[in-house]
Image (tube, rainbow, N blue to C red):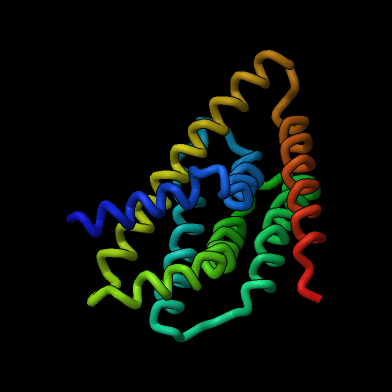
Length: 188
C-alpha cells in the first residue's frame, strides 16, 4: 500500500504542481468549451487523456518505445496549440476530441516516460506503480477541471461575457503561452 500511495502522490503532483504548466494549459484548452453541465463528458475526455498517458508509460516501462526528449518537449506545447486552435476555429466539443485527448495523452506521457522508466525498473511489477500514478493523475485532473470550471463560472458572471467569448479568450491565451513554449523548445 505504501508503494501505491507513493505513486498516487507522484501522479497527483504531475498535474497539480507548479512545474506542471504544460499539463495545466492542456487541460485549460481541452475543457474551455465546456461548463459544469457537461461534467460527465469532461470526465470521459480527461480519462481518454489519462489512458493515453498510461499506455505510453507502460510501453516505455517495457522499453518498447523511446522518443528523444527534445522532440517530446517540443510536441507537448504543440498539442496545446492544436487544441486551442480547434477551439478557436471549430468551437470545440467535437466527437473527435476524445481521440485527440487520447493521442495527446500518449505524447504527454512520453514527457514523463524517461523518469518513469528509471523508477519502474526497480519494481518487481509495474501494475501497482502504474495504477497508483494514473489514479493520482486522474484525480489531479478532476481537481483541475473543477477549479477551472469554477473560475470560468465566476468570471463569466462577473464580466457578462458569453461562453464563446470566454472560449476565444481562454484558448487564445493558452495557445499563445504554448506557442512560446514550443518556439523555445524547437529541436531543429
